[in-house]
Length: 168
Image (cartoon, rainbow, N blue to C red; front, side, top):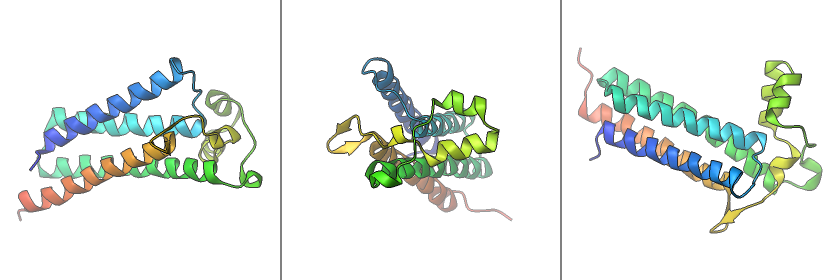
């Protein structure tokens, strides 16, 4: 059985690896990230920071539950954005939204909630498939990672309930 700290360290290092890969693709392979890619990056950062905090803090039962729930929440947000991204890549041409400027321009020119809605709805550039590996696109790989990280969080929650029973 993997300990809470070990699983958090592994997920944190996986997030660092995924983010390093994303930056390699952006700055070496010159693949420009779309708004949904940026949301997925932010979700990986949040999952990674949550796991790093859990690793360093090494909390008791309640803290472990809290860290696992927060990790699961960020995984769901990331998986939702990856799911929307996958849908856009497979959508008919008439369902693809128009292209917008970069994410910083979207936030600079729109109120916060409108900008968030625009980013989560995706843009025309989100529909482009510019890279695949083993037949899966970048958002499909992100979905795989978010599902794996969510499974780790669920495993941690189940393990907490078994190994640290609630005391009254």
